[in-house]
Image 1 (tube, rainbow, N blue to C red):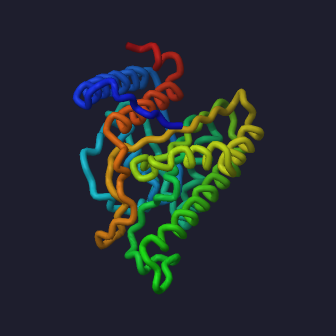
Image 2 (image 1 turned 90 degrees about the horizontal axis):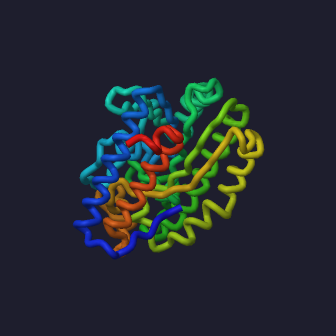
Length: 278
């Protein structure tokens, strides 16, 4: 699910190699897109990083940020240089899922969309409300007390979204690929073994297996990946830091996992053509 970068290369050398590989992969995607149209639906709860991921995958690499969160109100359409690749990023709040998820399910069932990315972040969901106004906040709570409850609650919400996906996709026709992408590596890197077990050995995986059973292995494939398009602390509105970026999480690790994510999307989207195009 994640790559632990080696230390054989210096940071400068690693950055150069990463940038070369990144440009090569984006060129592969653009060349493949000239021969067809690609549509990928991006799901996940609000605050997991869907919009940031959408920007990253179309080549608009984020250079910095403070972790501020803006709630999406509608399906965001991201295009790769006008070449026909559409990333359809769905709002993740429960009240908006009821309106927008069915639209994407219909496109998937009809074969218009054949790729799905479900974005999670091990409960580290950004929010736009002051901490003391959050439903889980109780009088006398410290920020640490709040985060213990909040992370558990948001992991449950990730399962709720997955259940909706399983129900909405169980009748899809034709080949369909799905990636579960665990974002915000920089916030949970010290607990990466636990994070991997949570998704790949727990209830989340049971729902993935349920979807596999409904669609059949010949029509459905799924992979787990994780990445961190941009590093920043988890900060509540008002500036309170709730989770700091892991001290041992470095740029080589970030680059290795980001490159793996892009390469996998290309492989799933373009098949052999995308892999062999130079």
